[in-house]
Length: 535
Image 1 (cartoon, rainbow, N blue to C red):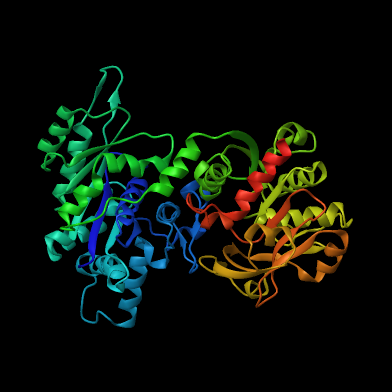
Image 2: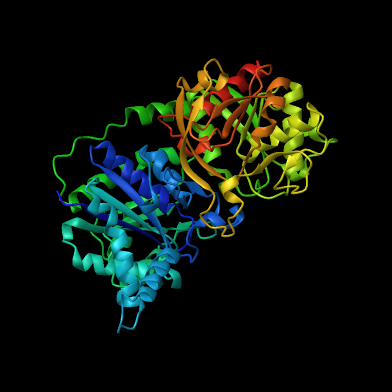
């Protein structure tokens, strides 16, 4: 079977959930035995989202091979349970960077470098790249932005050309639109969808399936009207109703027969029924919790939920595994003080101090760590959260009152967290951190070893600063021990406080590898510890 290509575009409004629709379709096709992956093409000029403020773009997701990517790749991995890579996220910045570099090298000598064919040829090359590996039967490509955006036009043009170049049974387009409900008129309106499809068709791209995001069910008349005015086959207009969990969307798309329509169009025959038993079991646990628990997420980007998307989803997975509803209370570290700390955190059964960059809100994170340590509340620190638990311990247990991370105070007398040696000569900010998956060796008999049940683990990183190992003997003598280290460099990856019910800080980002069917072990253990503390 030739590799098949599915393109997912969006219209009317942004944030309709193209990534969730793409991931849901991929899940259904994977559950039928096909090898599927998803890639995201983003129209912004940044090379990657690594230098973007989380308020601009949500969390920056990291892959095993060290790519800083759009958060949609997190959805892809959570739904499919397979790793993505640098090739799965392409930006306009990457496209232009490649073309301009080639021009400077002389690849186009004598030619005027233009959007068509040079930019669109590079886009097409990237769109087909994963398919040439031979690892996948189906490549789903999500086109970022909204049809009609100036930035998205080269991507849409590339899709048009591929529709013309590839065999008809090897290529199709799905268009996601919004069908708004006007409460004053008490009716659904299809005109925005019609206009969106017209824009797409004016660009030469004809959608094969239209998915309508809606708050109310689409009746047969409305579906027929959309099909007629948008020139798609009857039955190829399907609805995507709002759900209380994104993990229900694959089941709703199965009810709408999206996977069957796609398989028929792509001439894929004799597929088995989707095997979704473990997915359905997860949803049943999610829908029917037997317990509840309150956990504080202390961070500096709390106004935007997407800034901590993978952490929040990891709590969903861990909650279901513990048959528990986890109520995550996001608390701004900037607003924590000695005066209000008990009021803000006193009712919590667990405290997670989140990752981040820069000095803003650090003192609030240190206060949260101190409160969790002294009150015996289960504590979990991730990346900067782990670093702040080290600073807190140095100040309040070791007595180094001016201890700090050199990120916060470059002149501190006690730089218990310091810039990594290989980062000290780095001046370029983009893509230069310690990124991607690295091995970590866990101490036998430690809490973290019992959580993973393995001596060697692999987790993903995104940081420039590290535990200053010259202080390690003093920390361990006082009770905060290093129980996980990189086997090659000795870098401290995990610290824990054995005298505490549950006190773990990790330099890596475990949230990036949690999925509904395989919850991340630390999150699972942390939620269990919070439940025990509550009882």
